[in-house]
Image (cartoon, rainbow, N blue to C red; front, side):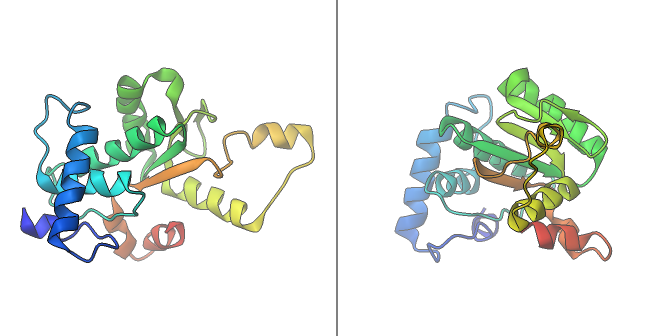
Length: 187
């Protein structure tokens, strides 16, 4: 567990008292949300850091429970009345995550945007490919506006101003030639 905990990065610089406080906050906030899943300290710490408003990066082996931390971010955003984005590298993974998260958060609260399919784009939780998110972020940064009513209607769900959390699933793609730049640009 220590090696996983040390990979959750925050501004706390590893102070043991701060780590224990993050774990306590995570336990208080998320233990009831995941009653059938015994959360590890590193997951609780990551959840506590999210509650404190910190950005985190979680690096753990396959099957260790990183997805739970992503779901914690979505729960945290929803409880704050804010939006969240969950990205995946492939359309098929976005479709799968869309189905999974609709069963957790409800059909009206989850949308999908993969470039060729768009469902419930104004939902508080939006699942999309990383490329779609990167393009949205670029448009937002450049301040593109549409005055045409049809164009404005087509851009519904593209506003990032109310987004509280962005989960970049499969972050290890960042190091891949050809596709890694998308993750770098998204960050």
